[in-house]
Length: 495
Image (tube, rainbow, N blue to C red; front, top):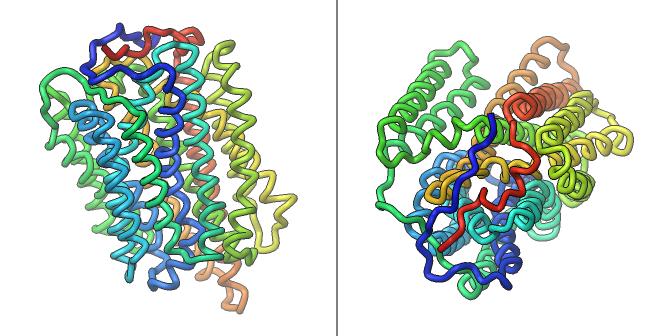
């Protein structure tokens, strides 16, 4: 089954994209996307310090990651629709302003709940910003060859932003304060906003403006319930009434969401977007790799700082090779897509990323960086680069003009939902593994250190399984041919 190639669909626009400025437009939206992706990881290096300062428990610390990812992923579909019908540039600017304000609010946090609330607000405004940014790229680059290049650049920003966030987070935490990992977003958002006002053209979809509020409510509440259920499993156990109850409610609400979408005249998620085999496979791969990346980043930070004794800055520097490894992968994957197609590239990428996480799952209290952590980081970064390069292109390939925002939102939502579920599930495995190790070993002054590493290893192993799932989805579901990625008719042309 091949991917549907959409015919050009007329869009309402104040003025079409100025062709001579299209690469500048890409730079502006890529800066905003970098800020959003950075914020998914920049607080990770700072999290041990924020946890201590705000007296956050080990069981609850994952909410600093999960609150952001869950609000981001939960509202992205609605954000995509709002961008389509209200105006992509307008929503892009609103998202930037709200993100900047929420970041400043988080930087002033005086408690764990305050921090978690600010992170959720950041995620909600990111849910407006990210799909608007990707839709601007989709409607700006209509030539097939240039579209592939633009998405390769955009994908590289998305793939490397997480690792670069670790470096920046380390520098800010060590030389300023953990609070600056949040406050730094404000000047970045102002720069991107001023440039967008000047250079980005407005566009929006034709048709009636109606938002699927029941769909948004059922999907978001369902995801929140699932994540909370996974979080409670680490505290109360998998068989507890609370855990099973929230998991059951989450599944039920997501079933309600599907029913609502099937009956809605203007659904939040037009099901034809995900029922297409290639687009559906790309989004499933995004969920799996989003979870795997959390497994790599979150617990690697705690391992480097808590077990190997690295400072925040040294921790950030130690993750640089992961970011560097992404760029040769993108350079290799971009021309290969037009020769062998995206499926083998993404499959191999998932396998390499899984291998890196598997190496990390063999960590000990005395593992060396050069012979153990570094090779694992290089494999993880290179695999991510191969997998992410075609991902967003495939997830939006062949969609009709009015669904550009929804499809753009879905691929971002898939990654964030994967991150939220991954953080909750992996932290649950970590907490359970640590408790089990302590219970089954004699009480000594070193048992805590060994128990923590045992927990990290379990989390890394689950991350490797998630990366293998991403490879499997890529191998068996993605069927886009190499020429489809360069077809000029794959993108609706703004009128």
